[in-house]
Length: 197
Image 1 (cartoon, rainbow, N blue to C red):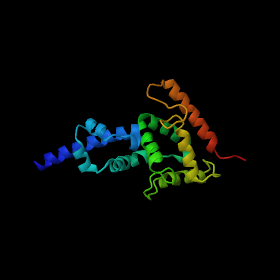
Image 2: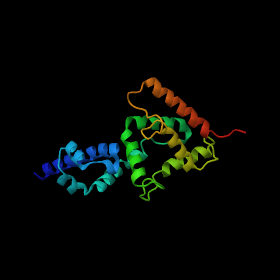
Image 3: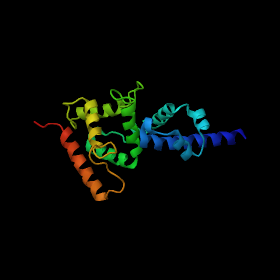
């Protein structure tokens, strides 16, 4: 009996987290509505509050649940920064909710400094990979690895849901996606190739 109740509780908790992910990605923290979350999750406010506390705490749980997916959506390959940028483009296309959650966290929680604010170095492996590529002469050594990572990431978000101009969508033609991928790869290649004397 206890196992059945635990399974039911875990299922309810999962439904709340899934509904909250969609709600926060669409409306942010301030705009999210608990009524919509519990309706989609097929539960009630009392149940949600017993699991997660208030709405802000629920956002924290959702965001922390997705931190690893956000940070590690695509492993960095310092020897192939253009390919890394293109894989990020595809990850943003496949999981736009991750970019939206990051955008809301930046707007409503941490407008400056470390986005995650948890004291952990989420990018240590990526930075070491870029530094290794720099030492091998594959990436310009005229920039700090952290700046290379920030710039490549920003370039990859050119058509993401956080884009100021055009956001890519699943209904765009494959021809259009391919054109963007080629442009992105070429821009990253040119920006970070080592200067040959």
